[in-house]
Image 1 (tube, rainbow, N blue to C red):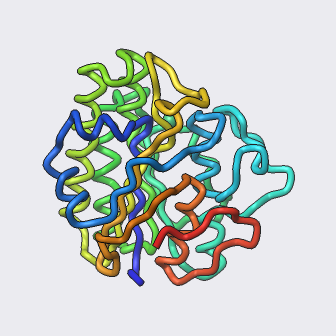
Image 2 (image 1 turned 90 degrees about the vertical axis):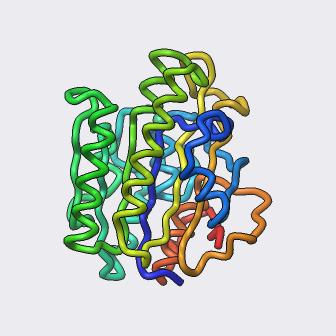
Length: 258
Ligand SMILES: [Zn+2]
């Protein structure tokens, strides 16, 4: 088991965009780690509901967040950060879309940074928030870091999924991923994924373009030849806790991928 986990989420990154953008670090991740190109997200395939499912390992009808507006859970479930806090592990959230502020309950994260994509532009905010995450890892070495990059989703809405501008934004996101991966100690297992895909200039429907997401897992204890036939976004939380040697929350419905 690895000692630490870095989870990177590129908003709106379709698996087929990876073949088109062909960033050298994508090839490296595919060679050196596990790559699942057919993982599934949850309905509605919308950013906050999908992130809540990622962090709480249940479908939206259980956590109750069905739009990008957060409301407190009626029957609260621990998310990744609450569960790690219970076991005295430290977490940090680094993101450039403000609605993610409620992914962890107050008092459960030790580090974090929000750099607004609306203010700086998502292209610049991607770079800045990555730099902050690198600094935090190298200064404080948190057990778990979540890094959210919002540029690709913004480009998808503005220019269309799989447009040249969208592919360019995916490439830029991988520049950020390569930067952080090459700037941190190798005791971090790196998981890279997305919350949903997209079609035309939108997402949210139950169609393969919106529902299919990639998952990469690379780290010291990860066997790249592991064959994973199917995976869901709700499997990521139990994967993170297992890698950190922590129990999954009782209510979680996903299963560890490694
Ligand atoms: Zn999204």
